[in-house]
Image (cartoon, rainbow, N blue to C red; front, top):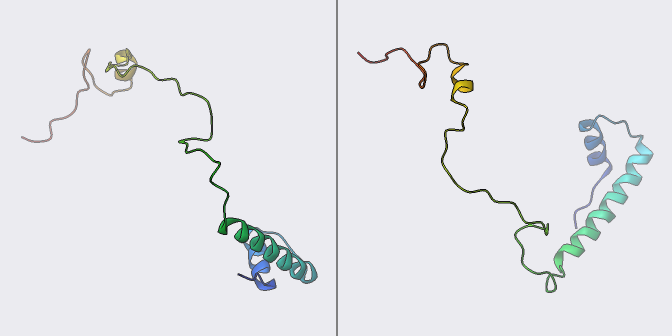
Length: 97
């Protein structure tokens, strides 16, 4: 069992930018230790026999679209952002002679 001490609580308080008095830090350390112990006990023997296998916890079906290749029907909108273009293509400077 991992025991959380007062120094760990003070360090966590520093990183989350809260001020915790020493007397409260000691009480919080005990509470954190109890909580982590409780969680640890539950994780040792999880009840999984009644849980069906699943891909996602949601029952909703994801709507699928047809997988069709298109140009997006936005050629002019895309080319309007180009510094130089022909009616259907980007124009770029020649890189290799």
